[in-house]
Length: 313
Image (tube, rainbow, N blue to C red):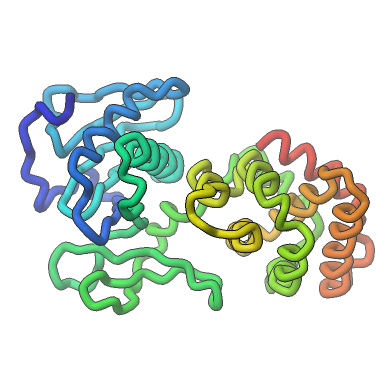
C-alpha cells in the first residue's frame, strides 16, 4: 500500500526538466487518503496494464507508474498540499495520462464517499514569479479560448503554447488525411458560428437526447469519459436543457480546434434515423453552405465519409 511508504520532500522537484507538468488543483487541501486511492485504482484497472515502476524510489506522496499499452514512457504522480501533479516525459502521453488519472480521481472520490468534495481543476505552475503556486485553466465562452488565472491574485497569466498540449485532445494521426479531405474549411471557422447561432434551437428540439449525443461524442473521441459522466450525472441537479448545453459547448470547443468535427456532429443527427433529426441536420448544413457559399457540398455523400471516420475513432 502506498500509505505505508515513507514521505518524500516534493517542495522543489522536477523529474522531467524539459516538460510541462499538469496540476489537478483543489481549492482546499486534497482529501485525506485520495492520493493512495488513486494509485490503488490505477494498479487494479482491468482494462489497462498499470504497474509500479522503480519500486525502490517510490514514496507515499511520489509514485512512478508504467502502462505499456497506453503510454510511451513512465508517468510520475506527486501529492502536494493542494494539487496532484502529473509528470510525463513524452508529450504524446499528455492526453491519455491526463484522462487516466482524472478517471482514477473520479472513481476514488466516488468509492470513498467524497462526492460532496470539490473536483480538481486543471492547472499549471503559475509563471508570475511569486512563489510556487497554480494558475488554473478555465474556458472563456465569449472569446473561445483558455485563460489561466493565478490562484494568488486571480489575474490572467501568459503561458507557453506547450501547456495547451495537456488541454486539447490530439487525434489519431492516421485520420488526419481523412479529416482534411472533408469540405474545404475557411480560416474564419464558419461551422463554429453556425453552432453558436443554432444552440438555442438544438436545446429546444433535442435536449431529450443529451445522453445519446454524449455517448456518440465519446465514441468519436471528441469528449472524454469523465466529460461524458459529468454531462449524464443526475446528481448535479441540472435539467436536460443545461445538459444539452454542455454537450454543445464541448462540440464548439472541438470545432474551434478542428472545424471538420462539425460534420461528425451532423452525422449524429443523421444516425438517429428520424425525419426531424435528418431535416435538422440538413438545416445546419444549409446554414453552413449559405455562409461559405460552397453550394457543391453534399450532406449525403459527406455522411458516408463521416460514418467511416466516426467508426474508426
